[in-house]
Image 1 (tube, rainbow, N blue to C red):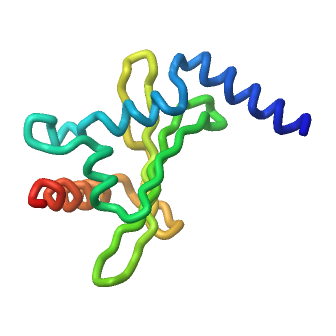
Image 2: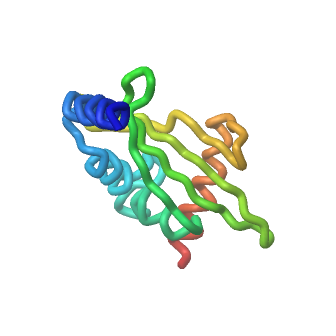
Length: 129
């Protein structure tokens, strides 16, 4: 019990230092747009991801290197087969911005360059429905 309280204290302290709560960090990413998919023409990150993926889950945590990370997890369905996708965003609280720092499919890390094809598929699918 003592260990749990200590961990919670460290997490809360870290979030106070960042100036954002977990919910605010998640909302910041969900309400934003990718550069290639601006708000004038496309859905937000949260709208598109929550629409495209089944069982979408959003979470935030402080990494071992003291970065504030927002993590999205969801299942992409293609040809009746499900693929578990994890995308992590590093939040820069000083600049009020974020960037993608990690991409994984079925437990295997992927090159970030491969994410652009998936994002195109997601945002085009959302805009046509």
